[in-house]
Amino acid sequence: MTQAHTNPAAAGNKTAEVVRMAKPAKDELLEFVLQQLDDDQAQEVVTIDLEGKSSIADYMVIASGRSTRQVASIAQKLAEKLKQNGYGPVKLEGLPAADWVLLDAGDIVVHLFRPEVRSFYNLERMWAFGDAPPVAGTA
Image (cartoon, rainbow, N blue to C red; front, side):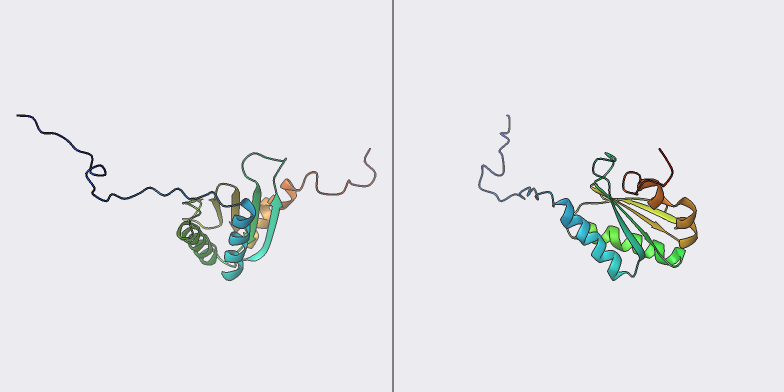
């Protein structure tokens, strides 16, 4: 004796539907990230437009926290808020030490630093090529 397997949806039973959300505009995501950083009192927030400079992301956001505790808190809250608001899970690197935490949110990469570490690595200067005016006296 064989049993027939039926499709629950075909039998009239309600099943969960998969709902695909539209990908948010990158500027909308950037505004969300900047607002969250402002809400969490991140300091010296800088946005660098990477379009045409790199394929890793469209924007890089660099910000500082006053201490490792604040850097970790900002990073964790930002990752949680991005997920809660439908921007998907983000990848976090550097959270245990929290001297420099990297959040990869797809179109936007966020670097959170303690001030001393930020000045040492000076990412703003490294990524400013092409945006800075030419140095006088160079040919």
